[in-house]
Length: 509
Image 1 (cartoon, rainbow, N blue to C red):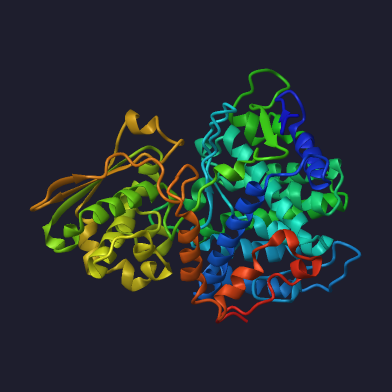
Image 2: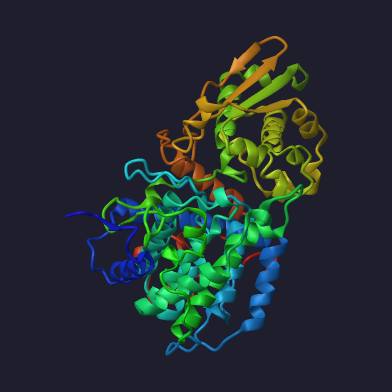
């Protein structure tokens, strides 16, 4: 029995996804593997640490959107879609789209949760679109309204990641300057509606509304200094996805068969091979290990994931050559060689002088200079010692004199075809340090740094536990209790899901 479902390009793939979602949630396929369930729970747990930390640090967009959501309180009414969803750190029910935009914004603010690269060579699906595990609040909101238990909630999270992850493998939005959150918005509309009993026609309308009315372009994350729009992009798209699903379920009819619509983004930008087709075949997992979540990657701190290879290379060099930490002045220069599109994303000349955290965490020279500065200060060079936290992006850190001196010594360059050919299988990067007495030291080619799905060091669990502690400690009194609240999902009752976010976050009302 196959554990994949293939939706050919000459079919209405939106309706195919709608039927797949309904069947998957209804248990009509064999069960996902324990590994798939465990991995999605781990990604969700990681996102919670990111979210509560962003709120506790008083970041602008998450707290603004949270205050806005509290203006949309609703009565808890389990008989219809009027029942609300809750916010991180609250028991107050609000309109679900408002809960989703606030919670997703908090999850994404630090740009530190999961990542996918849209790469599955076994299927021949290697479009290479980015994506992130930002959309779990959509599932929790639907679960709270539907009265779902923990197992159903976790299964729906797996489903949402599967749809957006497989779309990322077959259609590159960034090629056409469209933001990657569109794939997550499509998945959100389908899963939210399916969890609440929407019919196939309604799910098709919901996706049609999202794609026809709400397409964000990469202007939101382009410019000399980045803004709140970069961090809130997934949140705003998840908000409109939930709103579209709710409207469709109330009878609003949106455009049909949107993947084959000649005027919609897919056929407009990527011409189909034949008339009456979409530009791609879509293959989704139904059971076992056949889920894209198992190929997604973790970030171990606050940094753009494209820099993970350079971080690993630097840590490897410092660990093997502790003499490098004896005198900062002896480090003459540091060269980082990498692939496209990483070179463009985090090597933009404007990011050599970042003035905001949103720009700094997308600046290769800032990220590596900060790590090296911390290593020099602490005389330590491991992942846990150097893991980047929110404090590494505050105003003082952004202007730290040693960081700024080290930034001037970094040469960041594109490695050409040799590097490009190895992405997105890995994160091909090399780091070379020129030292007064040690000469030239090289990391060699780094492909699978810590956090990458293909990394085999066996340290992921310990590093994620350290990250959870690092981010959650300033946000809550009981870090182990917070961790327990968001683990063992498959055994949680509907009441535990309804009160999932009912805990205190420091500084948040």
